[in-house]
View 1 (cartoon, rainbow, N blue to C red):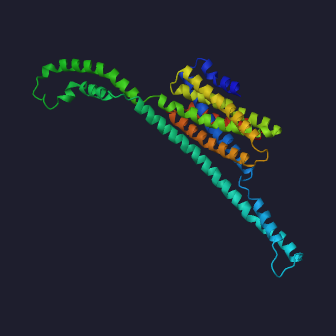
View 2: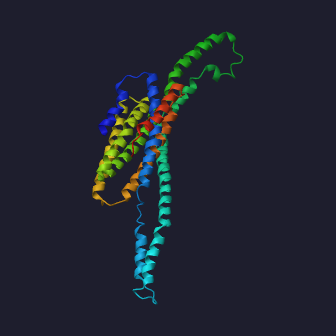
Length: 349
């Protein structure tokens, strides 16, 4: 899984791409992010959550109540009364019917929405924190000196408008030459000042962190299915089905944000290691727990939905990073959106 994700993500790095090709591949990658989150990840988490029982032990409560009712005899009843033997099944049936089923469904409804919004909110906080940190770190202590230099290097006729009304008009050519000289000095400083306030690195961790959380949740799902050999291979292929496109999308998005190829490979390696690490850790924890623990499958579904929320924010963030779109780019985004649908035809998670 690690090697496959890394090799698939290195495809955009191994070829020399023109600006047009890179923008088209970036558009396809953004569409893949959106389609994978809405078509693969969130439905997979919902299916896992609803196919598992609620971790709270609600099935033992009715039986205990029925046992207590059976063993409890009123003063005017005989121990071998037929009424007591008939009352126990009737009470157990009334406690086993509607309330538990309704509570299970309502708790799962809440878990789906809460897991999605927590994942989305986490990535929003990480994005805002990384942007604020990059903005603060990129502005040194003596940055106010640069502001004062830019202020002093403005055009002379802007600073002396009020005091130069009675100057001779014959000095206009000299003023124009001085203005050009000032602008030639101020332009590079202003450009450098702009890059200090708008760093690319501030936003480049957001796709990586979101996809790493999603990949770790996929690894947890793979490790949780290790106790069912007939399911583990299906889950493995389900993960690899969107792991390659996710690595491809991550690489194209990071390249579009201006990162160097060395930095992109580092981010790609971190992403590729997340799913195997999550699978190994989950398998080790599962081997230490009881094999009949039903809460593991439930929390696996919750984690998948949580990763779906993070994945959805990454897709939205990558879509906003795209510049003005042409018709070909819109077509590439739509192709990427529906590509997971085509890949998942006839495939069951």
